Image (cartoon, rainbow, N blue to C red; front, top):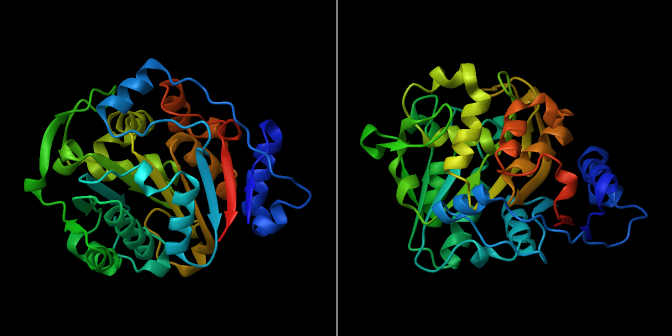
Length: 328
């Protein structure tokens, strides 16, 4: 089942109802199929970022945000990518692709602290099908990295799917000028500086400092150094990271959502099974939508979203982006 969301305020209520009421069938009662086709012209800064980093050409016939719901993380990934134009829109033959999940914590998949390993494997497989030359799965963990990579199930799943799993060893970092307001020169995982494409694969979680951790916060996992120094200006630093490493594609894992106790978690009682995936090309809109849908957090309560929009990195008004909801 496919439903293109209506426009304006109607689109906003429709998208929120999909996750709050319990799925596409409940959210689409009485609604026809309609695609909002207006596409905003990117600002000069966005064009420069797309040239410098790993962007994808805009296509006004395709949605910018897809919400997929169903039982299988692999099926959700495939369907969402199909709706966005197919994996070959994002990954070309011969590309080196960095797949960046959240592997921050020594937790099992059921605890919802790290990205679902089935989703990571599915994206690696899709990249291989598109002809990627190399696929690197990496992250900068908060707990001991080797343990996190193994206990999360991501290392085994990524290797089985054909990826190179890269631990964040000191030799893997390179000093880089990020050109930000807060983040100037900082150690960055080297593959981020040389890859052709970046697929950001965060998991939706509560976060004690920022309210929630989604796509923008997941980019903290590309830098090393003393990241705790950034906490006093965390919102500005998140916008700096997005400006420096704007993903080719963001795939938000909301199969299990940690509603409380984040970002470390540990209690299964804090995790809700939502069986949802949110993917798209506007990372700010994805974060704004998920924050509102799961925690009722408007963008004006999340400074990192306001700052990102002010810098031309995306839209906090997710109802203004072309969107589609699918049941898998």
